Structure formats: structure tokens, C-alpha cells
Length: 77
Image 1 (tube, rainbow, N blue to C red):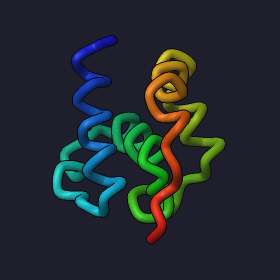
Image 2: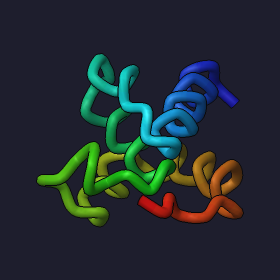
Image 3: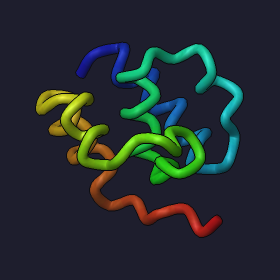
């Protein structure tokens, strides 16, 4: 597991809680990963579709995301 993905998972956990402070400095791909992982697509990437995000993130990051986030529920608000 790369340090980059560990950092993105940390930011995604913050975003899941509604804290978006660290999202602004992310690249497009990183932001999409955080949005997908945290269930915050609407808040973080309102103009992008989930299909676009999955394609942009790519298979390696998606495999990591599935391993780390598959048992996490969606945020309530």
C-alpha cells in the first residue's frame, strides 16, 4: 500500500465526517478518489459522474479502495 493512498484514505475519512479542509489542494484524480471513498461525490465533485470518477481513478486505486472502504456505510448527511 502506497503512502499516497494512505494519505488519501486519511483525507477521505475526514471528508466522510464533513471536514473538507484538506481536499482543496488535491489533484483531480486524488479528489475523485476521496469523493468516491468517502461517499461525498455530490459535495466534492458535483459536476462529475461516478462512472467518470471510477474510470479516472483507475483499477489499482479502485482495488485499494474496495479493500479499505467496502464495509463503510455512506454518510448520513
